[in-house]
Image (tube, rainbow, N blue to C red; front, side):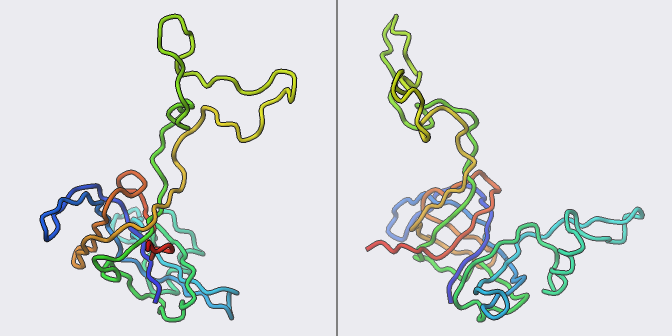
Length: 223
């Protein structure tokens, strides 16, 4: 059975291996997730599992006692979650699995599906850096820093003046940096806390704290 789970990034810390080696790790709150839909080739044309993560906040009536529904959930979504027999979820994602029929509707997916030593791929939206210059954004070289050069951290020449008399598409220039989907492959699971649903992953994981992280079995196994 292929494995995947949704998690939120808690932060970074460090732990010691059995041989005393210090290992920097990222702590991830992985699950519990619930299966909200199982898609099959017969019904949907492809095989996949849809999972939900983190409960939506309750919206109460004026008396403050009766729960009307959950924030940000329309009637169609309410019916979708009710059919699965689960509460409304904040995050809903889909994983394409060939063995999707092995999952059951409403089943829980917890951090213990992974074990120490497993290799994973982690995907998240990277930290936004705002508008940055070509040196920080693209790693371009700076100009001479001596007095009077008047060219320190500018981009430099963009193109010829007469032919082709334009700047080619794709030219590296200053602009918005970060806030894009980033995937880091072949990260190692150092420890798994099944009771607290925590994964300790060796190294850095994309995104800021509290970011949603998608964790899957690695697709490229290092030799």
